[in-house]
Image 1: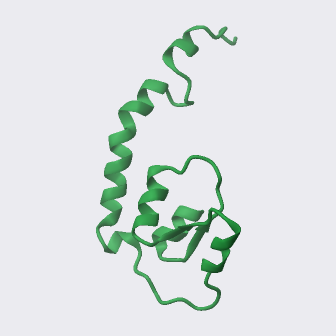
Image 2 (image 1 turned 90 degrees about the horizontal axis):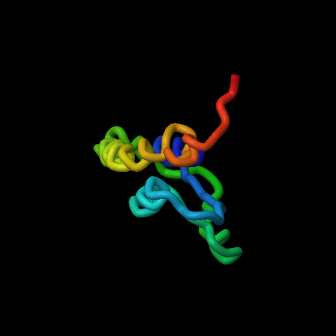
Length: 96
C-alpha cells in the first residue's frame, strides 16, 4: 500500500531494509516517498495535515512508471511468472 499512497499523494515512508526497487527509487526522486534508513531519519516524518498533492496520473508520471515496468517485462518473462528460471522449471518433478 506504500506505493499506492505515494501515487495518490499521501505522504509515504518506508523502513524496508532490502534492495530498493526502481519504482520506489523513482517515487523517492520525485519526493513522493521517504526512505528511512537510520533512526535519525525518523525526524523526517511529518505528522499532521499535509498540503494536497495531485495523484501522479495528473502529472504524467504514471506513464513513466508504466514504461519502467514494461521495460522490465522481458527479464520477468525469462524467469517465468513465479520467478523460477527456465532451467529450474525443467528439473522439477511434475505434479499429478
